Length: 502
Image 1 (cartoon, rainbow, N blue to C red):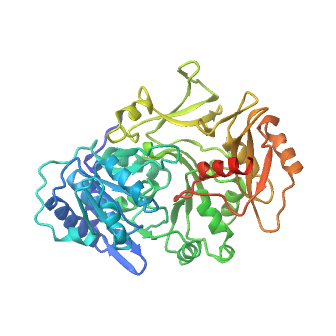
Image 2 (tube, rainbow, N blue to C red; image 1 turned 120 degrees about the vertical axis):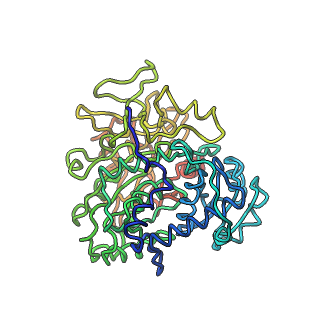
Image 3 (tube, rainbow, N blue to C red; image 1 turned 120 degrees about the horizontal axis):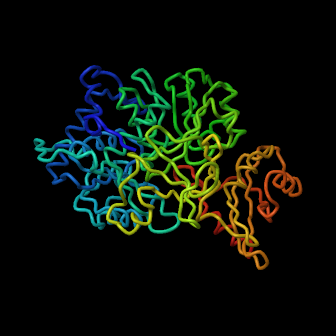
């Protein structure tokens, strides 16, 4: 696929039009603060001067340790103008983990918010030359940028979760961010009069490239929340301050479970975008019944992240699907046994190519090579494709387990369990078994007052799936372990399952 971008491909230019035409429009709502585009642009310019005065140049990485806050937003635009890249750290990490990541990206500078200033001494021993607060960058001297950033220069670095091993640093370029936002705009348009609610953390790619950056590019308003709180989010929605938002299925589950949900005025909420996993059908139905359009997305950090989407008008006929590729994105299914791509309907590893796909992990050529087959990024997800070109993610290659010689994908079993009446959340993990090699253990979160008998659950599964895919055990729990962005923490759950079956 050959695509051509205009001069606005560089992220550092994305505020220019609004600053010129509507400088007093609100760019960020943060608590009681209202930050205009003029103010955001001025802060970014001041930070760029401060970064340059501290030796930051094109190609450098600037790390940030902060809760969701306007300061990292200005810092991103400052880095973009210098040709540097912002690396937002996960504040949930232990100091030792932060040091590993700073060394991984070879950060030149670490910017720590006041909320996390107590951790400065914990990380200063890392391989980083300087540790400052956001305000320390506002006193820099004149900017003298000698190199104009290239569209292929990294502008945003996001660490993979590292839940299954050593973390990797995904380097997303200006061009990657440009094209993923262009594709998003074709499906979920954002105009200058719109408000977008951001509750995903800024150390997650969705905290930038699934609506916030597009909103700032279009001159819209972002209601930025330091943390996700269901009651607070419903209050913002009820006040009519936002027309769109993005979250993972857990985000919308917690909102729907709130006693306030039924009385909240959702009339101004045009749509909700879902990522991270497929939203269970019963949960999507609750939002649709309230008049809210649901856009189911699929992506991964290495693709910046948008790959596929199921549009609201397609959901009734393709429930459980992740839809078809976004504009400017190509998707294929790879069959490793034949070392070829699947034609027509079939199943295989989902692969992606397009201008949104990253060029590699920072300082890790070996992992970069392993991530690609030719020009195609290998996602590690197994998917099926129907005759109409709709994709359905079956599961992760690494999460697959073998029971009695048959492959079982937990995600496939979980979707069927999610559809059982009274089941709010479900997860399946494997445990060793002397006879079958591995068997599944299902953990279920039930609605208040609901019950789920083992025999009924098995019968339900066998109506939809082969018998060997049914878990051996079913355990009811109050909640499932989640990562900071709301994704299921399978490693923690698998460790728990192994401990409980000894």
